[in-house]
Length: 247
Image (tube, rainbow, N blue to C red; front, side):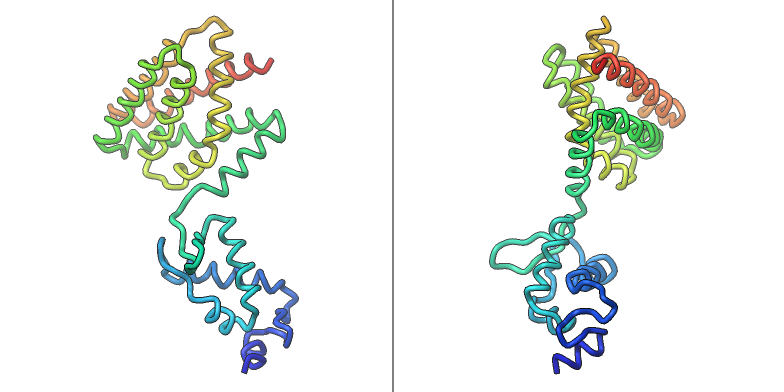
């Protein structure tokens, strides 16, 4: 019966796909279809290993290898003694990628800044159109946290990171939000460097606060063009500060 299943699904008697595709990849593609196209939502369990092994004509060990691949990609969560469940959408795999790539090459910080131009100018414009009152109030609170932090640079950077994350969320575009979350670690490091460069150039934190205030004013006024322009001006300043820090 097992050999019939393998034959019907294009498998050899050893469980290797006749196409030459690795067996683990067969499992990965099957699970992707279940998760992405099969109607499963976050928290739903996968079928049992036994059921999957029977359906695909593969060993339970191969099923586990495929599951591990999707755990690493952030599509599944595994708890000891329980079936794997579908993960909520998250930026976990992106975090690992951005963190390693920026550390690997000094140019990464400037390349990351170019990505910020593409994402955050659009996010500010979208937030001006879409932000709710609660989101605008949250941005105002984040800006106040930046003011209160003052010369406490760690606290200032944390509040700054939160301000920009709130704009991404207020844009209403989930892809922008996930990308910003994925860049969080290198963005935090980059902000610390650019702040150091800003102060080394004889500028003050008040200048930066005003730049953020201008972004917020445009979002509150629902002026998408002004919000995008204010964000662009801020990032141009950030680029100059980062160059000064790394010179």
